[in-house]
Amino acid sequence: MPSPSPDHPGLFIRDPYRFSDAMLIIPPVLVECLQCFDGVHTDLDLRQTLVRLTGDLTVGQIEQHLIETLSGAGFLEDEAFAQMQQERRRVFAESPLREPAHAGSAYPAPPEELRRTMTRYMDGAASHAEYAESLFALAAPHVSPEGGWQSYRAAYRLLRPEHRDRTFVILATSHYGAPEKFGLTRKKFITPLGETATDERLVNWLAERGGDAIEMEDYCHSFEHTVELQVIFLQHMLGPDVRILPILCGPFARSIYEGGSPEEDEGVHRFFETLAELGEREANHLFWLLGVDMAHMGARYHDEFTAAADQGRMMEVSERDRQRIACINAGDALGFWDLVRENRDDLKWCGSSPFYTFLKTVPSARGELLRYEQWNIDERSVVSFAGMAFSKPRE
Image (cartoon, rainbow, N blue to C red; front, side, top):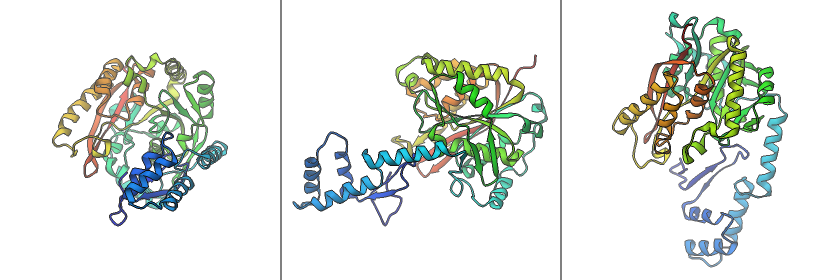
């Protein structure tokens, strides 16, 4: 991304997978050189580019420094990067704990400060008695709580003390996971508010029957925020001693870009069937949570326009979002996915795969929109999200 520092212009590089902790700013004059690191260009191509950009024939030292800096930071596909990747995966796989990855950035790290912040978010939140018996699922954002706290509150205020005894199945977006894959882990989730156990019995049951679409001990869990943010709201509302079944849902890219339904992929189909069976077997012992955002519009997301919340083009986005939400609330999985596939999902709903997984797994669910919001994540870009509640029709 462009450097965030006016005093240090250039291209800012970091590794979202956190194999590398390094952060680099490549000076503007050298940015073009990065195109030479594509596995096709040669060392000679790089030197020719440097000579052209600098006007200096003696670029050997600059060339070597650039290569060594990128390699040392873990930003080249070479032995140094392979070792970083292997070590990070090993450490995560061997640890019994999933440590907090976003404390101190997405939310306060000191426990007392976090408790005060969560109390501020949830203050004045009154539960709705009409959901007391029928409520079995909620959808909440995974955007920064400071930007989306009202939608988080709209959903999480419906939790009641009796829900504490259930296992919370968290269907959350996997921003970096492989398409058509579902990431599981047995690890306990740690936050400043305490330690929350993963229901290993249910994880093992899914892993044994769910097929090859499952990524067991998915490394994406180590840094993905979409489950972690649901956990801190769960812990605040019900205490840390709840049980969760965290599932990261990768994008259904084949369906969006090539056509057909997601379950035409055999691995996805088998996982849907297995999760649906688990839902039926454990029906009275489960509560479903969806950690989902909706549209991503504007410059940050490669659109050729500046997006402003609830203004201009975002009014059309709001209408299209609500059409999708209406399908979700009606339990209309096919109608929802038809809308997602329009223009290869030009709304860029990162929550589409968790929503669709939920609709296919619990087809009897009927939802209600509690709150819909758009938020300027920066001056030129907008994310939309909502709080939603789901119940099953009374028999």
